[in-house]
Amino acid sequence: MTPIPTSSLAGFTPLRDEQYINGLKSGDPTVTHSFFYDLCRYPLTDILNSLMGRTLDYDDVVNELYLYLSTDNWRKLDTFSAFNGCRLSSWVSVVAWRYFMQARPRLLHQASADMTDLEPQTSSPDIDIEISIDVENTFAAMPNKRYVSLLRLMLIEGYDSVETAKRLETTVDNIYNLKRRAIQQFIAIYRDSTK
Image (cartoon, rainbow, N blue to C red; front, side, top):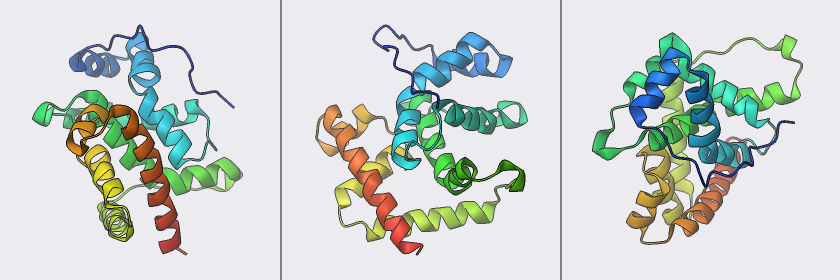
């Protein structure tokens, strides 16, 4: 199993959003590595731990997101608009959470199944609508509405942990704890609703 990167990010200085986008589109290996292993490390690690239950390797999660974002010459990156000052790191966190929430059943099945028995699955607008309805129904069933607010801010509206902490009037450190518990509650309620 490929471990989660443990190198320190203390000296990491992110590139400008345009540099990441141009580097990814041009196939620059240094920018690509920095994007997935530095800039996206926290959200991908959170997805790996919280959503995937550490059943996948970090490299598997990176590979999945790379394939998703790079489809049609990185067309997905063209949808990033920095609306309301949103940073690429916040945007990609939201995109990654949405993608992996949808891909979770397939990925977990692949992690435990013989790969030769699987058929490729494609997304459709109907599936996206179905996922949105499932998410909203799960939010409505969650007893802790603060968790719902946090998940809406971070995963749907695209706010990062600092912005979310300000809106919820708490510390950034507490946001990480709240987010972990919010995701656990979301998954438990979603599982109960699909039984």
